[in-house]
Image (cartoon, rainbow, N blue to C red; front, top):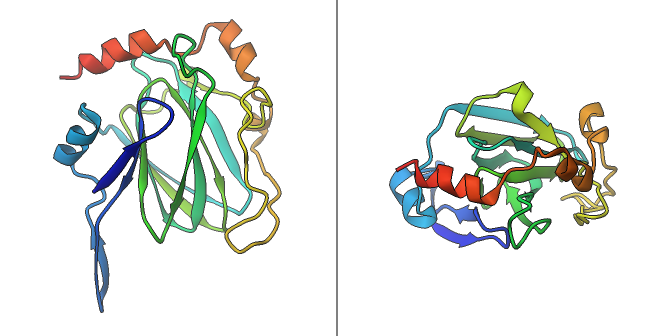
Length: 204
């Protein structure tokens, strides 16, 4: 498995080695040992989610209060999405920075983002299917959002899809009503980099 850490510390791109023959292909999507070698930490799975999105759909920016927060291992098994990780830790030197990875059904790469980071993606094709392995279960009272079009963050969302056709951003009512980063920071809900680091260190 090839890997690289993103511009947002605590997030990695992971590209599996594919084995192909006349029948199709096989790959190791996730292995705990290799994951720990790459990231320096364990990953404990508590919930697995799946979403299917039309072209242009934006989901996020979502985050979970930390600690414990929620780490995610994200893969697109059908279609294509532009996956985005945002540093939303006010005490981080890269606070407000974001980075992107193209996840698609050709390379079948994944993104891992640690607790305390924001996550979003835009679907670049109809029926894009994304799976999320999550370190904690869903707790609605601890789940929050930041507006994905917040100009202060400035995510450069694509304007054309995988087929070259124009994309029209489509947000859920909840995501469209989400506050901007500055307002969430004032609310005191954003994760602390130091507290998240202490939590991860305690995972063993």
